[in-house]
Image 1: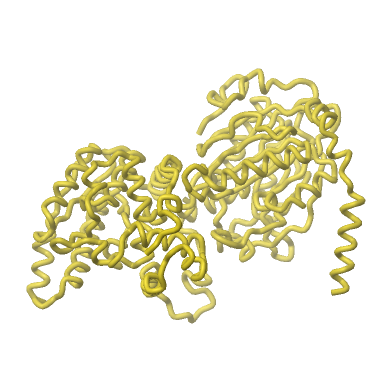
Image 2: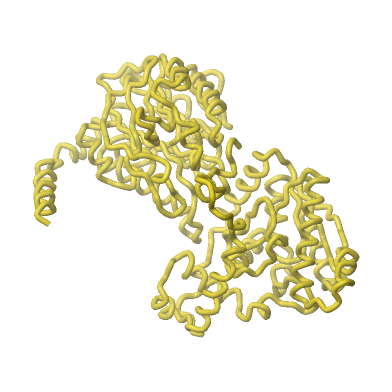
Length: 280
Length: 318
């Protein structure tokens, strides 16, 4: 497709301003619920590396517990990259191999496809992080970015489960900009993004489009609320817009609490509305 | 939090606000901006904090402390509004009024009317009592804001004579309050200017957003522009006190400042930390600027009135 507006223009951010806000966010939202520590899954990818770096700056490296959770089919490079990130930030990673628990489960369901297996792995990792949360009195900090959340490219109650999320309002392109600004290890910034749920997996192959392109569409569609006509004039074609639009709508459920059948006059989250930071 | 130094009440790291700069002369007033992060929904804790700051400011020689919008309650209250609301005779306001002897304070709270309407209000306390109440007139209900769902809009914009504690001024200072979104409607400061305002008091709870490169924080730019413009066009002082801290992930960007009647901040605006900022304001400067720029003298209220009448008549015909 032709691009009349470059992604760099639309998505470029003031990384210093964003860093200041996110450091304040982590300090404030962790501290006021009575925690000093955070725990996160460190995959070797750019999102979790960025969150680890921000948390280490905000709270001090000794307050950040990165957990590396490989499966036997995970790329060995992922674990190596995760270790590089941890070392570069002065963090002591925990390593929990999820293979035994995942394999024990799928012994009973030998025909499970890789989507099902991938979701299960994401939820095993979630249950480990919440267990570590209890053990280490550490809040689970999430690493889902805005692109993933909008496209539903994540596992509900898996990697999408966490107490707070510093990256949820940054597109993947902006996550890369932040990672470069914070001088994260080059390999982590430069390699192709992958959920690494099976060998050779790549986000952009899974999705069928490039982050740089979809981020630009999402920015103009979601943030700028441009009409279809305006988006066409920016060079986006109808088939691509239909595909992304459908993903946006179809994954709305993942971004909301479960719906509750309306019965009383005050139903949770409908007409019973309180801030989460009530009294904090 | 940056606290005041023991002798003169000047914060150790107050930007460009040296002790000399706040030493009051005859006719001057010392204004203290309390850029704080209120605890959401915890009136008791916030009250305690207010009382401590007022006490520090009084001992440091301040004449007026300006707190942010909803400083006693926090901002994103949602269904907490009725729970944290205060009646005019609430003990919390009485305690604050009692603390305001020899010093004045502008505090933010939810004020409940007798017929159960809840207003986002700023109460000006002096001499042991409330001398003025402003109820926010423009309640933002768009984007991340939802004020009209929970709050009632005020319908008055009035200038009042600010006693200003123990300040000895040549004439009373005429103050008017604009709460946050009120500032986005230029008729609001214009109405106060028409009543002879000297000092705009602008408490705020402005959430930071807009992160485009090269534009700093979007909201900060907007307020920078508005505070300068209103101070300059209405040749008045403008005190902008924004809050800091986070509520449900939304960060408030601070940036509190006093802008002089020529449209320039008296010192570098604050950052996003809890800080007290001290400033000396004087009527002499106001007089000099109004001689140089007699904009208020030249204002054509007859023109505004005639055109407004014409528009109103035309609307009636529609």
